[in-house]
Length: 179
Image (cartoon, rainbow, N blue to C red):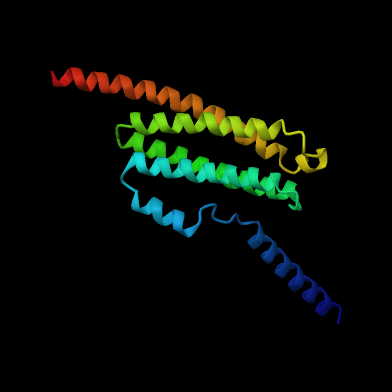
């Protein structure tokens, strides 16, 4: 009888751990329509990076709208979720830049647009960080992620500027080689 109780408890524990693990998995930050748009722009760096910038911007706009809605409940968790989606999309944007650079694509024009978006993202994130409307308990739910997002955008901005300088230099050398 005692062995049966142990087995039942182990079975219940196993089921609980299995379902908890499934809940921990992150969901896709992009909607199916967004994925389709990215798939259609797979070989065009300018279009693809413009889409990633638009999707990241949309997450920050949704975040601002939610935070300004007086009826919003659980704002701390919702802020965290929108920030996580933003960070995931921003990471994808950077991975795509790396892929296009590795393929020796001319990234000057797309990088200029990304740098503009970086500035915009940084301003919006800093505004969120200094927002007076968040209680300390609420802000605690997303503070770490917000700091990470600000660091990622700040580092991304520096990297993107450096890549643009490198791309400009490479274009100059290509131009001299053709003369």
